[in-house]
Amino acid sequence: MIRIEPRESPSRAFAVGIPVLSAVISLAFAAIPLLAAGANPLVAYGEMIKGVFGSVFAVSEMLTRATPLIFTGLAAALAFRAKLWNIGAEGQLYLGAMAAVGIGSGFLDISGLLLLPLIIFLGAAAGAVGMMAPTYLKVRFGADEVVTTLLLNFIILIFLQMMLEGPLQDPMGLGWPQSAPVLDQGMLPPLMDRMRVHSGLILALVLAAIAQFMLARSVWGFKLRAVGENTAAARHAGINVRRSLFVVAAISGALAGLAGVSEVAGLKGYLTSDLSPGFGYTGIVVAMLAGLSPVGVVIAALFIASVFVGADSMSRAMGVSSFLADLVVSMSLLCVLVGGFLARYRILRTRAAKA
Image 1 (cartoon, helix red, strand yellow):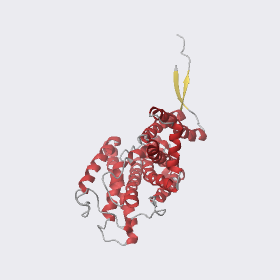
Image 2 (tube, one colour):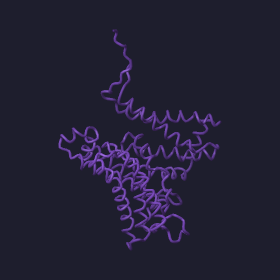
Image 3 (cartoon, helix red, strand yellow):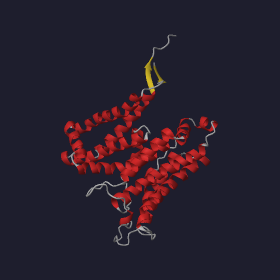
Image 4 (cartoon, rainbow, N blue to C red):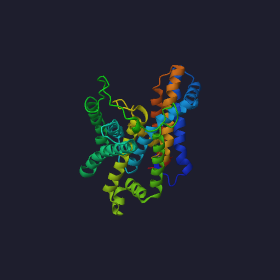
C-alpha cells in the first residue's frame, strides 16, 4: 500500500533545491522534442546560453523581458500567499497601461517633473481597482475569484480595443488601433545607451526587496501568512480577514498595473492590444517556480526570460521552433508542482495488514 504523510521539518536546502532541480529536469525533458526535431540538445542549449549571455545586448534583452515578469510574478505571489487566487494580472496589466497612456500622452497639462510619478501612481491605482472588484465579490457573495478574475481579463481586453478605436486612438496613427505616444518626459529613463532595458527594472527589484522584508519582518506579513495558512484561526486570533484580503488585493493589482506602466512608459511608448504576450499568465508560473517568495520571483523571472530569449536565438541559429520556450516553461511549472508536493509530503510504501 502507498501512504502519503506530511514531512515534519524539511530542511531549507531541500526546499531551495527542489525548484532548481525541477528546472534542470524540465530542461532534460525538453531535450526529447529537440531530438525529435533532429537537433542536438547540447548544441541547442549552448545556442540558448549564447543568445542570453553572449553579448551585452543579449543580457539587456533578457533583463527587458524579465521586468514585467517580476511585476506580475510579485502580484501573483503576494495574492496567493493569502489564498487569494489572482488570475487577472493580464487584465490589470492593461488597466495600468491604459492609465499610463491616458495621462502620459498629454491629456492633462502637467509639468515634466510630476508627469512620470503621476503615471506610475495612476497606473498602479488602475491595476488595484481591477483586483478590488473580484475581491469584493468574493468577500461579499462568496464568488470564486479564479472565475471572476479570469473572465475580467477578457472584459478588459474588449474595453481596451474599444478605447483604442475611440478616445485613446492616436489621431496621427492613420486609423491604426493604437494610442497616442507617451510624452518624452513621461517615459522611464533607459539604463543603458542604445539598449531597451529601462529603469522599470530598478523599480521592480526595489519592490521585490520591500515585499520580501514586509513578508518576513512586519506585522502585515505575519497577518498575510496567517490568513493564507488558516483563515478561521486567523479570524479567531483577532485578525480582520476581510481587510487583509482587500489590502493584499490592492497591492497585487497595483503590481500588475505597474507591469503595464513599465511596458508602455519604459519600452514601447504607446499602447496596442497586443502589448502583452501573456505576461500576466506567465507571472503565475513565475510565482509558482519561486515558491511564492518575492526574492525567488526575481530569480524565476530571470530564468523564464532567459528561456524565452534564448529560445528565440536558438530558433534562428538552428531552425528549431521558438515555441520550445513555452514547452520548457510549462514543463518547469509541472516539475515544480510535483517537486513542491514532494517537499511537503513523503510517499511511503507499507505492507497491507493481513486479514
